Length: 499
Image 1 (cartoon, rainbow, N blue to C red):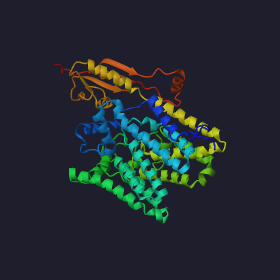
Image 2 (cartoon, rainbow, N blue to C red; image 1 turned 45 degrees about the vertical axis):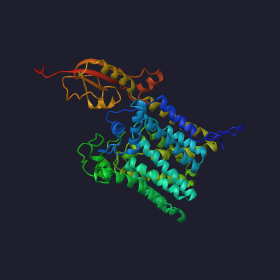
Image 3 (cartoon, rainbow, N blue to C red; image 1 turned 120 degrees about the horizontal axis):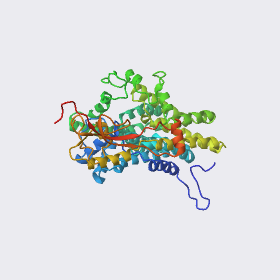
Image 4 (cartoon, helix red, strand yellow; image 1 turned 120 degrees about the vertical axis):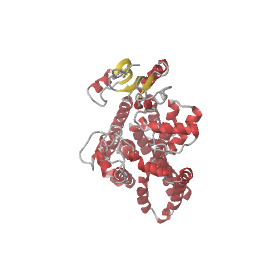
């Protein structure tokens, strides 16, 4: 077999680990196009606020589902307390979780399918744009994925060795995934189906698995009971998160109802790619078309069709595909989650595994051209998506200078800008414009500055090389140019409102 994942020297016997190339690809993309804290209307601001509270006061009693996700909030708070609040410290814990998730994914694939498949699968995952783009973001996607991969790897080891201790480790890891995001409960029906397929002597491992999971979740419930008198406080916060106002749901949807089996939610989530055929298939069609993960999904489907015989013969590969599809169905149509790509890391991880396994076999059988073409497409898409991000670092640097130069008490801002500039010195202390109408308004946006006398305006856009400018100008692979604008505006006071 051609050496793909394990490059071995005949002189030294040195062997490249299967994770080396995937890790290099991930870190290369992150270092080349870093996308740290974004803010604005995203979830990352809520996690930053919860981590700030933990850094200042120890773990704070959560009042939102964001703050209740301790596997992310607690280590972030510890890092901020020890190292201070800087963009790189805010992104450190997410990056470590992202790297751990990738390495554990490679370990899962290697244990079942071999090193060559694991190297290609890990590379496909690292080149799925959403994976490196979120690597520095304080979001729960990466922690949930990492704990899930840890749990699945522990399950594999437990079953191979018939070892109750590893089964307990698996239960604890998957309990941490549930504590990170309650939608991980969608794994339980899949694990139950898998348990039914086990030999009788392996089924007994369910007891230590369940005991460890229940014990860890019980500790969390006990802590809530002691703090609030309600052991289900965290679960209620998660179940009620659908009541939080969001622009992702169509207007008029009753958010007071539970999201479970909620057809109004399923029908009315905003479609990420604007594809509207029928509510039963829209989530899947939009996921396949989304540039954040669609190429990985479609590439896996194409390779499975091209290598249909190999796919059908591999029982484990079929089971991975079925499990990923059932997981998608449970999240989308039972839990009624917002069907955006970030909710489905197991779907594109399963696709990456398919690319790795079938790609390694195609390479061995002489089909190197199709494998090389697929991974070249993945790499090109990942590079373009990583490149095509707003230049917020320059805007933040300019805002810091404007705030420092402004007379004390002269500036206000809006909520979106304040969240985006959460790590800019002095920005958090600025009042909202509605509370201080006589102050000059500092805002960040994508439209020309307006609303009064424009005191300062700065545009932030890349000076692109000619080939990229041509692609963008023709709407190929890159979005339309939308410069980020930083505005300082003196609002026009109503007639007679002067002082």
